[in-house]
Structure formats: C-alpha cells, structure tokens
Length: 364
Image 1 (cartoon, rainbow, N blue to C red):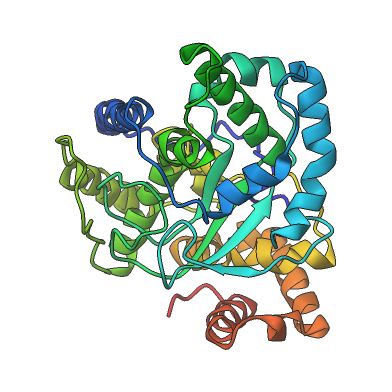
Image 2: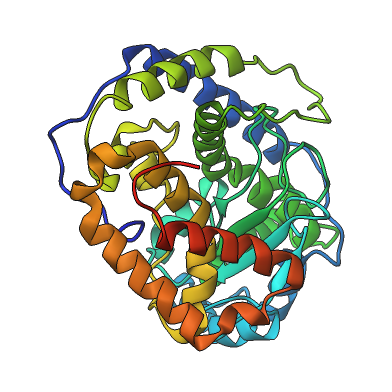
C-alpha cells in the first residue's frame, strides 16, 4: 500500500491557501516557544513512564564514541522493543492504555528503525524528534504535552512511533551536557527529566499537524472541536477560529474537484510538514503478519474520511487504492487477527473495515 508510505510526485491540481501561510508561520512560532519553555525548565515525568524504562534498559556506556554508541543501540533496539511490547516487523506488540494521551486512549506504539545520521543527531540533539505522533483524536490547539494525563477532550485509537536508537543518541547528548554543566561531580538530571524537558515537547511538532487534520475532519462531519482542559504557564495565542475559516474554504474548494487520495492529501495543509501527505507518512516497516493490523488501524479512520470526502466524483481515480486497501483488509479478516484485539476495539476496527469494503462513493 503506497498510500502513507511514499509521496507521489504530483504538481497538478494542487491548491494554495495563501491565508494559511500567515497562520502556519505564527502557530509554528507558538509551538517552538512552548517547546523551548520546557527545554529550559526542570520538569520530570514519572520514573515508571515507558520512555524512562526504555532509556534505563538501553544501558550503553556513555563514553563510547557516537558511531559505536549508535551502532550498539541499533543492535539492542529490537530486543528492547519486544521486551516492552512495542509493535515492529517481527513483533505484534500490545495495545497500551494512555501512555501519552491519557487514560482511555488505546495506543499502538511502533518501534521505528528509519535511518538517521548519529553525527547530525549528536549536534542537534535538542531539536531531535525521536518520538512522534502518528494518530490521535485531539483537535484543540492548547499545545499541551502528550504526558499521559487526560489534558484535553477527544478519545480513541492513538499511534506513536519511537526510534529507539535515535532516542538513545539524544539521551547520551543530554547526559554529556549535564556532565559538563556539573563538572562530572554528579547531581545531574536523569531520564525522567530528559523525557519531560525534551522528548515530550518535541512531540508537539507531529502532534500539531494531526490536530489540523482532525479539525478539518470535524468540520467535514459536523463534529464539535475538542477543548483543552488545562493551560500552559505562559500565554498562548489561540488561532483556532482563523484556522477553521481556512479549513472551511479548503473543504469547499476541494469538494468541487475530482482527485486521487494522494492529491487530496497534498491539498490539505499542515504546519510542520509540507502537507498532510508528508505529515501522515508512516515509518519504514514491512507489512508483515505482525505489523499489518496495527499499521492499518492507525490509518483506517483517515482512509474512511478520504473516501467520504472524495466521494463518487473521484471513485474512478481511486480504484487502484481501493483495490489495494480492500485486499489487505480482506486478508486480515481471513486471518482473524482482529479477534486478538480488546473487545472495545474490535467493534471500532470492524466498523471501519466493513465500511471501506462496501464503499460505493456515498458517505453515511
């Protein structure tokens, strides 16, 4: 399934919403300010948090040179992923409850192995995004950290990817900077501080791109937007109304055109990505028996929306996508792997699958 794994080289039929450029620039500055705020203040996540436990399990000497350190981390990563129940090419993984988006959030956490330059990561460790949001149901622009607390409305399936070797390299740089700060005399900050000060704030970049998509989907279906239940210590400008006005024009303009799902994704704006096609790219993974169900679960709601939005007018343009998607969904049904999910998720996943399999161009 190329959709969500590659970007098509399409230059035609792309609309540009110029009034989004101003909003994009200013919202990006707000996210950067929030991220830097937490970079420069000492906060800590619980020692029992999944990311803290992963960092403790990595256990590689910090004195290794960066190349050797990254290589050892890459070797250990599959074993660590399996130990903690992460989903990968070779491990089914488990459904987590609210590790990032709070209690009631059913979370699929993927172990990502995309290539990175350890030398670049070491130099730019403060801005590295080793953990990314792949799917969530939040639509508010409170810019609250995905710290495992229920900080905003909106519940459902969420997806997160963790690049364990990259996370390890980032953590090594953090610890070495602490050693310099404290002259190797001890007393420096630990993994629970690192996660809260750098990893969670840097997740906001991928989180916000998904918020834009969720707001557009809510406007399309006539669903109320979500609300933030807490506020940051600093003031944040609320761009919600301005963004919704642009997204309403986006829905109106794109709703009159016939286009493939690829082109539709290219036309939906994002903040830190070029567009939603780029924002929704999945980590490089083989679609094995182990990974197929969780990977598809993280894109079923979006596939359903794209089909509803494109409707009958674009049905002929999307025959190939539909055929590929349906083939994989029918394979999942034959293998009966959906029955391994928690009961509450089985209904949601089966509902999406049955809808997509029977889709004829008319939204319901």
